[in-house]
Structure formats: C-alpha cells, structure tokens
Image (cartoon, rainbow, N blue to C red; front, side, top):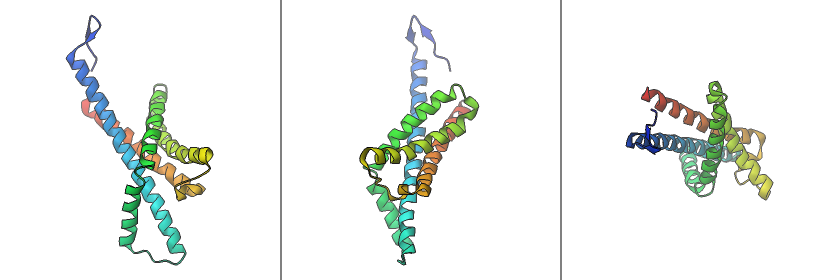
Length: 168
C-alpha cells in the first residue's frame, strides 16, 4: 500500500500501515530468534549428553529432557541476547543484499542466520580466548550451531513471505 502524502505529511492510513509492517517484521524476527536459540541450545545440550553416554554413563530420557530445559533457561541470560543481536545485524544485511539479489532471498537469509551464529562463537573466541558453549569447540559442533542459525533465517523469510502473500 502506497503512503499518501499531502503537503509533506503522512495520512493516518500510511502511519497505520507502517506500524503494521514493522510489527509483522518484529514478530517474524522474534520467532526466528526463538527458533535459532532453541535449536542451538538443544544441540549443545544433546552433544554433552552424547559425550556422557560415550563415557559409559546412562542418561535416561527424563534426565535428558531436564538437562535440555535447564540449559534453555540457563543460557537465556547470556546466549539469547547474543543470538538476537547477531540475527538482527545479519537480517539487516540480508535485506540490503536482497535489493539487488531478490531471487536469492531464501538462501541469503539462511546464510545470514548461519553466519550470525557461527560468528558469535568465533568472535567470543577471538576476543576473549574462550568458547563458552562446548559444542562450538569442534568443527562439526560449530556447523550444527550454524544450521540452527540457518533455521532461524529460513523461519524469518518464510514468515515474511507468508505475511506478504496474505496481503495480496
């Protein structure tokens, strides 16, 4: 919907449509952050559980679930804001690139999400010499974290597409 302007002022309809547009994008971004964070957290926890079972310890399903939920809640203070900020920057960059590469929208957002999560771990390692999430200490684990970010990027673009098609 094009904004109507009279003498440089926006009409009420254009302001409402702008707010609606931004609210939809915010909702899609929040769901993408939740998706990426939950997948990254669950894969990190299950990696630790897998290493425990490889050492001969039996971890019942109830304990696996409890550990997973504890990690989701426990890492929220530190890791969730990092995921949110990284995905914000990545999605803004992808949106800019989509101006010239519109047909690459889905792969760009998937790549942006993957890059965002991988860069969290790389930057923490380079800046502080530590990798607080154990799974990111291996190449395979870092790739799994990237896949979690890619899932967040795909979630975002699918939600945006669904909202855009509902308007037509």
